[in-house]
Image (cartoon, rainbow, N blue to C red; front, side, top):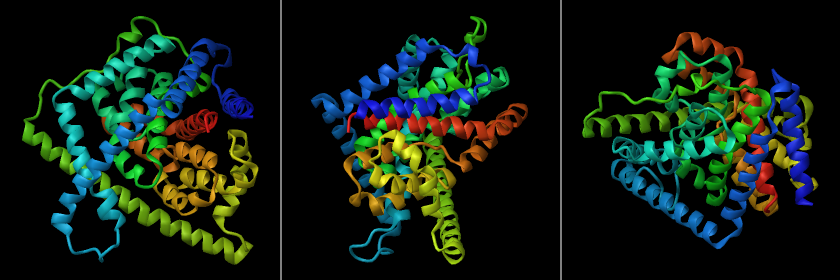
Length: 394
């Protein structure tokens, strides 16, 4: 039965993507099939083999340790603010992001992370035949996040076509930043966070191949990411990474305050006027999509509500809501919804990506703003595809 839902989920993604494709005749099946096979193999290895399970456990323990180390710094500054036995989301989940941001800065400083990104991007380019810049962005987005990744390619932004720009932005919006992966793991099962990060890279490129197909000449494909000639001093880099981590924590905290309060207001209005909450309405709207992805029929409304909440607000709000009901859902639903939540595909990200690109190249930023809704469609379909792939093995 899981194989049936693999086809229904993919047909939904492919059908909607085909409907909005700008050049249906140019869609190439070979790279799409190759990447889907790679997704299935990777998901199977990570979820159903001893090596994969041990690898996920190791990664989970690493991030758990990093979060605890980050909390040790938080406790030194803010110790005593919490009641005994209580946990504060901002202190215990968001502020440790500062420490992880520092570690990422160190890995970048010593060229370890860029080397890993370039190698993975090279392997991907051999698999899908896409441009090296496309594969670089797809991989680096999973490490650096949707806005930071464009800083590493700011000299190329003004040179790429609008078609390539759409693919680059879809990859960025379909990924997450490794700086907040530890925070995700406090709300979702770590194994689904790890698997989603891996599978999302390919899902974004598959969807881009359907909605936005194109071919590159050798001259165009020579556009590669370049590094800044001036390298900051080590402790300057540490300081900048700390400030960057603090910005992320504060921005996420502010967004949670605003979105959760707004969602509660809308829910109250809907209850007052229609005797049903806004989230329940969203659940019924997205229920058919959840069913096509493989969610058991009895749980499609609950799953659809969480999925829609993520798109309307952001993944943190949806994860917090999901955490409250996850224990009442089947393991299959928990896995599918968890993977769907691990991406930046939401309305707010349209503004973030548009602003990030515009800050580096105003003309290209205006182009991103024009296809913003199509960008949300592509990244959401990528999340649907990733969740569908995982559902096969649950």
